[in-house]
Image (cartoon, rainbow, N blue to C red; front, side):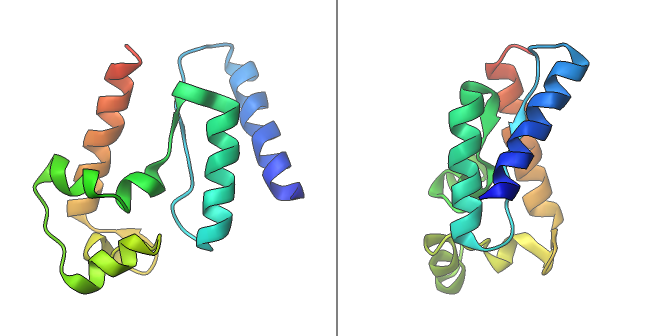
Length: 116
């Protein structure tokens, strides 16, 4: 897939441009689930511990445990199918405040794990 290769090359170029080992790559969360998973796998392979698979986190039980959330059955099914639960969306393209706060906590936790 050409776009994925170009995307990886762009991120690596960005890293080289800023000349730092302190970075965090956050994967895509929206779009075709199969493509999102494909990109996330490529990013994980390319960036290892400096990569955060946000899509998998949002669709996992971990986000519920970390933030004491509960989802209804429809939202649980969506997450199980790799779709962002409607409970986390303001509209089809934007997260709501609840999701944004949970995502912010997860990113902060990852940055602390990396000792940034």
